[in-house]
Image (cartoon, rainbow, N blue to C red):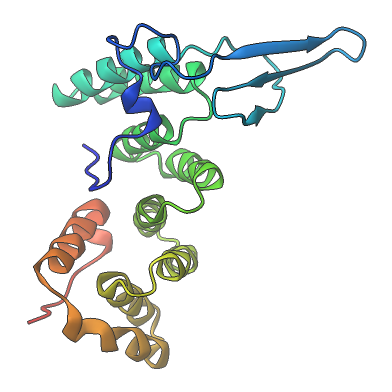
Amino acid sequence: MVERRQGRSTAEKGNSNSGQENGDGKGEVRIVRFERGQIEWSKGGNGHIVPPTGQQTQINPRKAWYRCQLGRAFWALGRIQEALEHFEKACELMPHEPYYRLELAEAYLALNRYDEAIEQLEQTILWAPYDDYYYIRLTAAYLQAGRIEDAIATMEKAVKLSPRNAAYHCLLGLLYLMRGDEERASFHLKFRWQLDQYDLSFLRQFQKMCGHSFRLPLLH
């Protein structure tokens, strides 16, 4: 469903064998209340402060992990709507875990609910601003929604994060060609000769993400 080369995320580690509520056994989740100002905030094991929300949600990484696994199971069966419901619940239980937001966005995209998918992916980037994969997925979502300018702006950020990635430059150049900007396209397409088999695999995978909204020309 979602393929990545990097290691498991915090969400992936929160499995049933941990014996801890937060999955990794480090740091506990606390809800701190200030009675006078009626202000509530939570602090996770990583030290980040979670801002108050309109409705208090009990953070439970272990249950969120189970929900995500159920969502994956329904996804594998082709029951996308049921998978979506479990991913939504996982996000409620762990509202600041980017990986669960990514899974939820994938379900929205599968149901052609582009605006909701884009909203989830944009939020994910705010929480994981240095993970280039989320930028790539958001770029694909923008293309599916027909928002070429937003796709280019997002891809430019991915290139800044990985300036030596030839595949990213090539993809950005192709997006400029889609917009009709040949001058900027040529600058990024100069990296094309550096493409190896992994880069080509990435571009083909990106084409699958976008479906008919993006066509990959012959590179060799």
